[in-house]
Image (cartoon, rainbow, N blue to C red):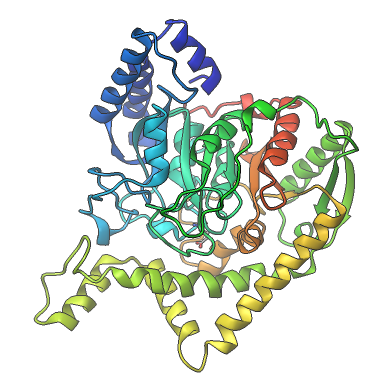
Length: 486
Ligand code: GLN
């Protein structure tokens, strides 16, 4: 499928209709899903109805926005009124939300055509989409490999052209890491830029919704549509939203030279040699485009992972307390009284990784351990934030690899949670500091698997982040390559 702008032109020039575009996407989904399993629910009827409404507007001579008639996939942890929202968990198997998330509401108003709800690691906990209670999504570049996670379905669907763009959520890397594994662009906005109303909470102080696309421009257009203040989310920022897509230029266009910092701690041990080579080449390319390159040390960066694995499970253990068999979804039948109903519902409804997180979090928050673990983690979180603040006194944006390796094979890390957690080494500190980060393709390894470059911006630095990413992208051809499955 083409870019948003191309499809938009086709629509307004009446070269194709929104229904035809939706049918194309649905046809590809039908053909590819047996191999890929990106979607948990396919919303064919709604999609065709939404597309028909866009066609009516065009026929009536009304103006349509850029996203009108554009097929989009939505991660299945975003509430969609009347459409099952499972979070890839058994506990929400039958949950049909009575309300709509702010982001999907905004997209519907913009005329975007939702083709389905995408697969994820259960409650967004994981880095491979293998923790879904329903299915394992395949990586379109090599179907024996994982698409990354937790937004693996959203990343794979875009990579394989099952939709043009999609939404994911990122708590510790769940947009950027699968974008890297699937060779697409994925962006985590500044904490508070996008409303979390209707996003099923994992770790509320870290969760952000963000876009996937095949190009930086497509992700910029999608972010534009979902960003902005929402009174329904008390952490939502009251700020003016720049026009991201219109400010994209083929070069950096700053008054003085753009200063790019390379986070030195992200190179060295544990980094795959081919990833290192591709990212180093990308940095040289940025220099050729006119940027100044500075090595920058963020000494607290390496504490990101242990800090995250206290804070995220702690918040998760509190957030997931609501699934008790009373209010939502599953209720176990094998219980004789209220307490045993709670217990059996939660034992049967949650998968192993979710239970592990609930146990870690409950332990870290318990009386006697709170100061030693949770409070300490919050202090280290502040140090990580300060490292970034210091770095941004010297440079405009930071770069590093998105993930230490390319996509691994399904089953390779499922028995070793720690090696799975290591995937997010480079993305997690960005969530802890609340900063925006983008991952975009910067090469392929010798197996033909995509490699991602991560660019990190200042608080609310999305506009500049998109500019830098776009200028790099336009000077390369990585984003034009497509997986063979497609
Ligand atoms: N892989 C990380 C985790 O399992 C991050 C997940 C996410 O960003 N949702 O917590």
